[in-house]
Image (cartoon, rainbow, N blue to C red):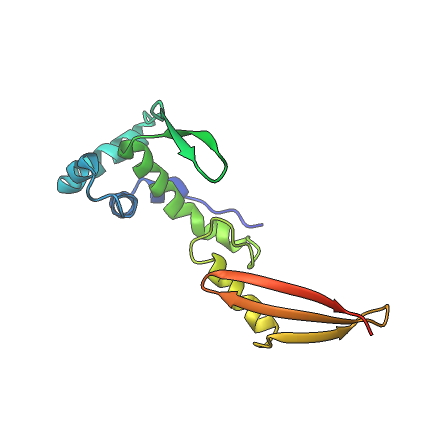
Length: 165
């Protein structure tokens, strides 16, 4: 494993913080607090940079929200941190360390990795089976195993039938 140095300088750079704020604001542009940050982004970039360089940043106290989930028929407790500065600092740090984490990650690790969701798994399974939809295998008991692969929108399903002679 190689050592990587000078990461903190990259995290604290103005370009990285500005890109992190824009990335964190994606799909949140209608929120009032996010609009305020985006309108005067250079001021907030310098504030975050000052907090990080002086090491005065500390996480805010999360706001607790409750959400009812119909599928599980229960109430979930969700901790929500404010957009500024918590989300912005999080994205600034992740932007720097994500390439390092991905480098040592197993290629087919698909959980919570951008660009490696269900579609990545579906493409790989299709490639493995060379787009065959039906596979017949003779198992150790002398029975024919019939394997049927199928895809529906974003779901992968597998049907396994045992055919006895």
